[in-house]
Amino acid sequence: MNPRLLAAALLLLLARPLLADERPEKLVVATWNLEWFYDEHIGDNYMKLPKEQAAPTRADWDWKLNGIAKAIATINPTIIALQEIENRRVLFYLTSKLKKDHNLTYRVAFIEGSDYFTEQDVAILYQSGLTSFSWKEQTKEEFAVQDYYHLNKHLFAEFEWGPPEDREKLSILNLHLRAAPDAADIRTRQGRLARKWMNDKILAGENVIIMGDLNTNDLWNNLAPDSDIGVIRGLDTPSTDDDLFDTLSAVKEENPYTHLIFKQFDRILLSPSLTKDAPGKKDLVFKSATIRRDLVVNGKEQDTEHREIYWKIAEAERDFSDHYPLVTEFEFVGDQ
Image (tube, rainbow, N blue to C red):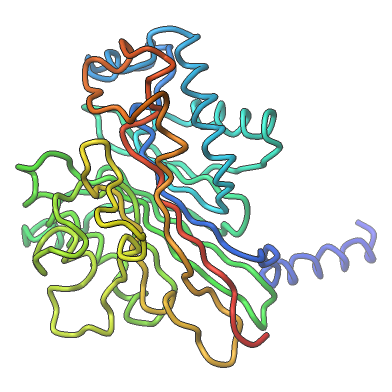
Protein backbone atom coordinates (compact mmCIF):
# COMPACT_ATOMS: atom_id res chain seq x y z
CA MET A 1 0.00 0.00 0.00
CA ASN A 2 1.18 3.51 -0.80
CA PRO A 3 2.82 4.96 2.39
CA ARG A 4 0.90 8.23 2.03
CA LEU A 5 -2.42 6.38 1.74
CA LEU A 6 -1.50 4.24 4.74
CA ALA A 7 -0.66 7.32 6.80
CA ALA A 8 -3.94 8.96 5.80
CA ALA A 9 -5.88 5.84 6.73
CA LEU A 10 -4.17 5.69 10.14
CA LEU A 11 -4.96 9.35 10.79
CA LEU A 12 -8.59 8.73 9.92
CA LEU A 13 -8.76 5.79 12.31
CA LEU A 14 -7.19 7.83 15.09
CA ALA A 15 -9.60 10.72 14.51
CA ARG A 16 -12.74 8.58 14.36
CA PRO A 17 -13.33 8.42 18.14
CA LEU A 18 -13.27 12.23 18.17
CA LEU A 19 -16.11 12.45 15.67
CA ALA A 20 -19.76 12.72 16.67
CA ASP A 21 -22.92 13.93 15.00
CA GLU A 22 -23.49 17.66 14.91
CA ARG A 23 -25.51 18.95 17.82
CA PRO A 24 -29.10 19.73 16.73
CA GLU A 25 -30.73 23.03 17.67
CA LYS A 26 -33.16 21.14 19.87
CA LEU A 27 -33.82 17.54 20.78
CA VAL A 28 -37.28 16.04 20.44
CA VAL A 29 -37.67 12.73 22.31
CA ALA A 30 -40.94 10.77 22.15
CA THR A 31 -42.41 7.44 23.15
CA TRP A 32 -45.35 5.72 21.49
CA ASN A 33 -46.94 2.29 21.76
CA LEU A 34 -48.18 1.59 18.21
CA GLU A 35 -50.62 -1.15 19.31
CA TRP A 36 -49.94 -4.36 17.41
CA PHE A 37 -47.84 -2.84 14.64
CA TYR A 38 -48.07 -6.08 12.68
CA ASP A 39 -48.38 -6.39 8.91
CA GLU A 40 -50.82 -8.73 7.15
CA HIS A 41 -48.29 -11.53 6.67
CA ILE A 42 -48.73 -14.12 9.46
CA GLY A 43 -46.37 -16.76 8.10
CA ASP A 44 -43.68 -15.62 10.54
CA ASN A 45 -45.99 -15.57 13.57
CA TYR A 46 -46.15 -18.70 15.67
CA MET A 47 -48.66 -17.98 18.42
CA LYS A 48 -52.42 -17.60 18.06
CA LEU A 49 -52.65 -14.12 19.60
CA PRO A 50 -50.29 -12.26 17.21
CA LYS A 51 -51.93 -13.96 14.26
CA GLU A 52 -55.31 -12.70 15.45
CA GLN A 53 -54.02 -9.16 16.00
CA ALA A 54 -52.18 -8.80 12.69
CA ALA A 55 -53.65 -6.58 9.99
CA PRO A 56 -56.33 -8.65 8.18
CA THR A 57 -55.41 -7.43 4.67
CA ARG A 58 -52.71 -5.54 2.81
CA ALA A 59 -55.06 -2.56 2.54
CA ASP A 60 -55.54 -2.55 6.31
CA TRP A 61 -51.77 -2.68 6.87
CA ASP A 62 -51.19 0.16 4.39
CA TRP A 63 -53.78 2.26 6.25
CA LYS A 64 -52.04 1.67 9.59
CA LEU A 65 -48.56 2.22 8.17
CA ASN A 66 -49.55 5.46 6.44
CA GLY A 67 -51.25 6.83 9.55
CA ILE A 68 -48.37 5.99 11.89
CA ALA A 69 -45.81 7.46 9.48
CA LYS A 70 -47.78 10.68 9.07
CA ALA A 71 -48.09 11.09 12.85
CA ILE A 72 -44.36 10.53 13.41
CA ALA A 73 -43.50 12.92 10.58
CA THR A 74 -45.67 15.61 12.17
CA ILE A 75 -43.85 15.17 15.50
CA ASN A 76 -40.49 14.97 13.69
CA PRO A 77 -38.70 13.47 16.70
CA THR A 78 -34.94 13.25 16.92
CA ILE A 79 -35.48 10.01 18.84
CA ILE A 80 -38.67 7.99 19.26
CA ALA A 81 -39.06 4.87 21.39
CA LEU A 82 -41.65 2.46 20.02
CA GLN A 83 -43.47 -0.48 21.60
CA GLU A 84 -45.58 -3.39 20.27
CA ILE A 85 -43.42 -3.81 17.17
CA GLU A 86 -43.65 -7.08 15.27
CA ASN A 87 -40.11 -7.29 13.87
CA ARG A 88 -37.37 -5.46 12.00
CA ARG A 89 -39.23 -5.81 8.71
CA VAL A 90 -42.15 -3.57 9.76
CA LEU A 91 -39.59 -1.00 10.92
CA PHE A 92 -38.07 -1.09 7.44
CA TYR A 93 -41.52 -0.42 5.99
CA LEU A 94 -41.98 2.47 8.42
CA THR A 95 -38.63 4.15 7.80
CA SER A 96 -39.10 3.70 4.04
CA LYS A 97 -42.52 5.35 4.24
CA LEU A 98 -41.08 8.23 6.30
CA LYS A 99 -38.39 8.75 3.66
CA LYS A 100 -40.60 8.39 0.59
CA ASP A 101 -43.68 10.32 1.72
CA HIS A 102 -42.22 12.77 4.25
CA ASN A 103 -38.54 13.14 3.28
CA LEU A 104 -37.39 12.17 6.76
CA THR A 105 -34.45 9.84 7.27
CA TYR A 106 -34.53 7.54 10.29
CA ARG A 107 -32.27 4.70 11.28
CA VAL A 108 -33.29 1.76 13.43
CA ALA A 109 -32.09 0.33 16.74
CA PHE A 110 -33.72 -3.06 17.29
CA ILE A 111 -32.92 -6.32 19.07
CA GLU A 112 -35.42 -9.16 19.16
CA GLY A 113 -36.66 -9.75 22.70
CA SER A 114 -38.06 -12.82 24.40
CA ASP A 115 -41.80 -12.24 24.69
CA TYR A 116 -42.76 -15.37 22.80
CA PHE A 117 -46.44 -15.15 23.77
CA THR A 118 -47.28 -11.82 22.12
CA GLU A 119 -44.15 -11.74 19.90
CA GLN A 120 -44.04 -8.00 20.59
CA ASP A 121 -40.78 -6.07 20.69
CA VAL A 122 -39.53 -2.53 21.28
CA ALA A 123 -37.41 -0.35 19.01
CA ILE A 124 -35.88 3.10 18.69
CA LEU A 125 -35.91 5.25 15.57
CA TYR A 126 -33.40 8.08 15.49
CA GLN A 127 -32.20 10.85 13.20
CA SER A 128 -28.73 11.30 14.69
CA GLY A 129 -26.41 10.71 17.61
CA LEU A 130 -26.53 6.95 18.17
CA THR A 131 -23.21 5.34 19.08
CA SER A 132 -24.42 1.94 20.36
CA PHE A 133 -27.44 -0.07 21.42
CA SER A 134 -27.75 -3.25 23.44
CA TRP A 135 -29.82 -5.82 25.35
CA LYS A 136 -29.11 -7.06 28.86
CA GLU A 137 -29.86 -10.23 30.84
CA GLN A 138 -30.15 -10.72 34.59
CA THR A 139 -27.02 -11.92 36.33
CA LYS A 140 -27.09 -15.11 38.38
CA GLU A 141 -26.97 -12.99 41.55
CA GLU A 142 -29.89 -10.79 40.42
CA PHE A 143 -31.96 -13.84 39.63
CA ALA A 144 -31.16 -15.51 42.96
CA VAL A 145 -32.35 -12.72 45.26
CA GLN A 146 -35.90 -12.66 43.81
CA ASP A 147 -36.05 -8.86 44.04
CA TYR A 148 -36.11 -8.54 40.26
CA TYR A 149 -38.13 -9.86 37.33
CA HIS A 150 -37.00 -10.51 33.78
CA LEU A 151 -37.27 -7.63 31.30
CA ASN A 152 -38.20 -9.35 28.04
CA LYS A 153 -38.95 -6.17 26.06
CA HIS A 154 -36.27 -3.53 26.50
CA LEU A 155 -33.50 -1.74 24.62
CA PHE A 156 -30.52 0.36 25.73
CA ALA A 157 -29.18 3.11 23.47
CA GLU A 158 -26.27 5.54 23.80
CA PHE A 159 -26.16 8.90 22.00
CA GLU A 160 -23.53 11.61 21.55
CA TRP A 161 -23.51 15.02 19.86
CA GLY A 162 -21.00 17.81 19.45
CA PRO A 163 -17.22 18.27 19.36
CA PRO A 164 -14.89 16.48 21.80
CA GLU A 165 -14.40 19.55 23.98
CA ASP A 166 -18.14 20.13 24.33
CA ARG A 167 -19.77 16.75 23.81
CA GLU A 168 -23.21 15.92 25.15
CA LYS A 169 -24.08 12.29 25.93
CA LEU A 170 -27.45 10.66 26.57
CA SER A 171 -28.32 7.15 27.74
CA ILE A 172 -31.81 5.80 27.02
CA LEU A 173 -33.65 2.71 28.22
CA ASN A 174 -36.82 1.87 26.29
CA LEU A 175 -39.15 -0.38 28.31
CA HIS A 176 -42.41 -2.25 27.85
CA LEU A 177 -43.39 -3.62 31.23
CA ARG A 178 -45.88 -6.37 32.08
CA ALA A 179 -49.51 -5.34 31.55
CA ALA A 180 -52.67 -5.86 33.65
CA PRO A 181 -53.63 -4.50 37.08
CA ASP A 182 -52.86 -7.79 38.84
CA ALA A 183 -49.26 -7.71 37.55
CA ALA A 184 -48.25 -4.74 39.73
CA ASP A 185 -45.80 -6.86 41.75
CA ILE A 186 -44.11 -8.09 38.58
CA ARG A 187 -43.88 -4.54 37.23
CA THR A 188 -42.34 -3.37 40.50
CA ARG A 189 -39.67 -6.05 40.30
CA GLN A 190 -39.09 -5.22 36.63
CA GLY A 191 -38.82 -1.55 37.56
CA ARG A 192 -36.34 -2.34 40.32
CA LEU A 193 -34.17 -4.20 37.81
CA ALA A 194 -34.34 -1.37 35.27
CA ARG A 195 -33.38 1.15 37.94
CA LYS A 196 -30.46 -1.04 39.10
CA TRP A 197 -29.14 -1.27 35.56
CA MET A 198 -29.19 2.54 35.10
CA ASN A 199 -28.38 3.57 38.68
CA ASP A 200 -24.61 4.04 38.29
CA LYS A 201 -25.14 6.50 35.44
CA ILE A 202 -27.81 8.39 37.39
CA LEU A 203 -25.65 8.61 40.52
CA ALA A 204 -22.72 9.83 38.41
CA GLY A 205 -24.84 12.77 37.21
CA GLU A 206 -25.13 11.57 33.62
CA ASN A 207 -28.00 12.28 31.25
CA VAL A 208 -30.42 9.34 31.50
CA ILE A 209 -33.92 8.77 30.15
CA ILE A 210 -36.03 5.75 31.10
CA MET A 211 -39.18 5.69 29.00
CA GLY A 212 -41.78 3.58 27.28
CA ASP A 213 -45.05 1.83 28.03
CA LEU A 214 -44.68 1.16 31.75
CA ASN A 215 -48.29 -0.05 32.13
CA THR A 216 -48.55 1.50 35.58
CA ASN A 217 -51.88 2.05 37.30
CA ASP A 218 -50.45 4.91 39.37
CA LEU A 219 -50.99 8.57 38.58
CA TRP A 220 -47.86 10.67 38.29
CA ASN A 221 -48.92 12.79 41.29
CA ASN A 222 -50.30 10.00 43.47
CA LEU A 223 -48.01 7.01 43.73
CA ALA A 224 -46.42 5.02 46.51
CA PRO A 225 -42.60 5.16 46.73
CA ASP A 226 -42.43 1.35 46.49
CA SER A 227 -44.75 1.13 43.46
CA ASP A 228 -43.56 0.24 39.95
CA ILE A 229 -42.98 3.85 38.91
CA GLY A 230 -41.82 4.76 42.41
CA VAL A 231 -38.87 2.36 42.34
CA ILE A 232 -37.90 3.35 38.80
CA ARG A 233 -37.89 6.99 39.81
CA GLY A 234 -35.88 6.18 42.95
CA LEU A 235 -38.53 7.36 45.39
CA ASP A 236 -38.01 4.28 47.58
CA THR A 237 -34.58 5.45 48.78
CA PRO A 238 -33.79 8.13 51.42
CA SER A 239 -31.92 10.37 48.99
CA THR A 240 -33.85 12.74 46.72
CA ASP A 241 -30.82 13.87 44.70
CA ASP A 242 -31.12 10.89 42.34
CA ASP A 243 -34.91 10.92 41.89
CA LEU A 244 -36.06 10.87 38.27
CA PHE A 245 -38.36 13.62 37.03
CA ASP A 246 -41.67 12.49 35.52
CA THR A 247 -42.36 14.65 32.47
CA LEU A 248 -46.11 14.00 32.74
CA SER A 249 -46.01 16.57 35.54
CA ALA A 250 -45.18 19.20 32.91
CA VAL A 251 -48.18 18.41 30.70
CA LYS A 252 -50.75 21.14 31.20
CA GLU A 253 -53.75 18.86 31.80
CA GLU A 254 -55.59 17.76 34.90
CA ASN A 255 -55.27 14.13 33.80
CA PRO A 256 -52.43 13.75 31.29
CA TYR A 257 -53.62 10.34 30.11
CA THR A 258 -51.76 8.48 27.36
CA HIS A 259 -54.23 5.62 26.76
CA LEU A 260 -57.82 5.51 25.54
CA ILE A 261 -59.07 4.23 28.93
CA PHE A 262 -57.64 7.41 30.52
CA LYS A 263 -54.61 5.69 32.06
CA GLN A 264 -51.13 7.21 32.32
CA PHE A 265 -49.34 4.12 31.01
CA ASP A 266 -46.61 5.90 29.06
CA ARG A 267 -43.79 7.82 30.75
CA ILE A 268 -40.59 9.68 29.99
CA LEU A 269 -38.49 9.85 33.17
CA LEU A 270 -35.41 12.11 33.36
CA SER A 271 -32.29 12.09 35.49
CA PRO A 272 -31.69 15.34 37.45
CA SER A 273 -28.98 16.52 35.03
CA LEU A 274 -31.58 16.91 32.28
CA THR A 275 -33.76 19.26 34.32
CA LYS A 276 -31.16 21.97 35.04
CA ASP A 277 -28.39 23.81 33.25
CA ALA A 278 -24.86 22.76 34.19
CA PRO A 279 -22.53 25.76 34.62
CA GLY A 280 -19.68 26.28 32.20
CA LYS A 281 -21.01 24.22 29.31
CA LYS A 282 -23.76 24.01 26.72
CA ASP A 283 -25.93 21.09 27.74
CA LEU A 284 -29.34 19.50 27.30
CA VAL A 285 -32.17 20.86 29.43
CA PHE A 286 -35.80 19.73 29.43
CA LYS A 287 -38.27 22.35 28.19
CA SER A 288 -41.72 20.87 27.60
CA ALA A 289 -43.95 17.79 27.36
CA THR A 290 -47.12 17.23 25.34
CA ILE A 291 -49.46 14.34 24.54
CA ARG A 292 -50.37 14.25 20.83
CA ARG A 293 -53.80 12.62 20.87
CA ASP A 294 -54.70 14.80 17.90
CA LEU A 295 -52.41 12.71 15.68
CA VAL A 296 -54.01 9.40 16.67
CA VAL A 297 -57.74 10.00 16.98
CA ASN A 298 -59.84 9.69 13.82
CA GLY A 299 -63.42 10.79 13.30
CA LYS A 300 -65.70 12.51 15.78
CA GLU A 301 -64.18 11.23 19.03
CA GLN A 302 -61.49 8.95 20.39
CA ASP A 303 -62.17 5.22 20.52
CA THR A 304 -63.22 3.71 23.83
CA GLU A 305 -62.49 0.06 23.06
CA HIS A 306 -60.16 -1.84 20.74
CA ARG A 307 -59.53 -5.41 21.91
CA GLU A 308 -61.37 -7.81 19.53
CA ILE A 309 -63.21 -5.07 17.60
CA TYR A 310 -60.31 -2.95 16.32
CA TRP A 311 -60.45 -3.96 12.67
CA LYS A 312 -64.26 -3.88 12.75
CA ILE A 313 -64.33 -0.15 13.50
CA ALA A 314 -65.02 1.94 10.39
CA GLU A 315 -61.74 3.19 8.92
CA ALA A 316 -62.84 6.83 9.12
CA GLU A 317 -63.47 6.42 12.86
CA ARG A 318 -60.71 3.95 13.81
CA ASP A 319 -57.83 5.45 15.81
CA PHE A 320 -54.30 4.49 14.83
CA SER A 321 -53.46 3.19 18.32
CA ASP A 322 -54.90 2.86 21.81
CA HIS A 323 -51.89 4.84 23.08
CA TYR A 324 -50.99 8.44 22.33
CA PRO A 325 -47.47 9.79 21.71
CA LEU A 326 -45.80 11.45 24.67
CA VAL A 327 -43.43 14.07 23.27
CA THR A 328 -40.71 15.97 25.14
CA GLU A 329 -38.45 18.78 23.94
CA PHE A 330 -34.96 19.66 25.12
CA GLU A 331 -32.73 22.59 24.27
CA PHE A 332 -28.97 22.99 24.40
CA VAL A 333 -28.52 25.92 26.77
CA GLY A 334 -25.65 27.59 28.61
CA ASP A 335 -22.15 28.64 27.63
CA GLN A 336 -20.42 27.23 24.59
